[in-house]
Image 1 (cartoon, helix red, strand yellow):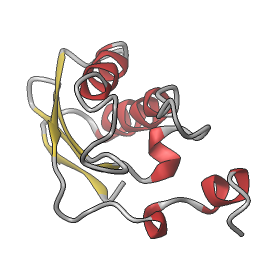
Image 2 (cartoon, helix red, strand yellow):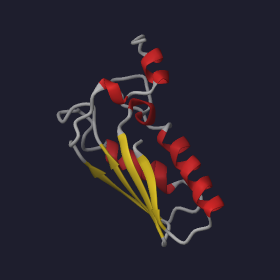
Image 3 (cartoon, rainbow, N blue to C red):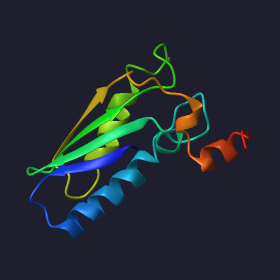
Image 4 (cartoon, rainbow, N blue to C red):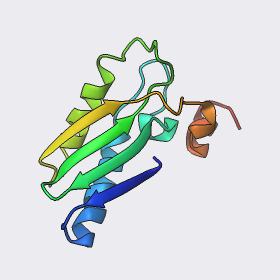
Length: 115
């Protein structure tokens, strides 16, 4: 994830907790074709949390023709909405910059025997 930005008046400790919980929630969502979660794959590009505890998420897919392209944003929104303190969430699917394996964490690369 390139970063979490905040335009919120939430206390920093609450923002930090929500951020950590969002990362944990993203790690529960998997691309069905790859045995690694979407966070470690580097599919989450940006997360914004505003004053109303609404979360905007920019994410991508490993390929524009991904078979779950219509479903995965809903899975991510659902996971984010389950985080305590999050009032609502919306996923914006983007393809710029395009995803490459370089966005994967070392953990993901190790899981896929790419190290």
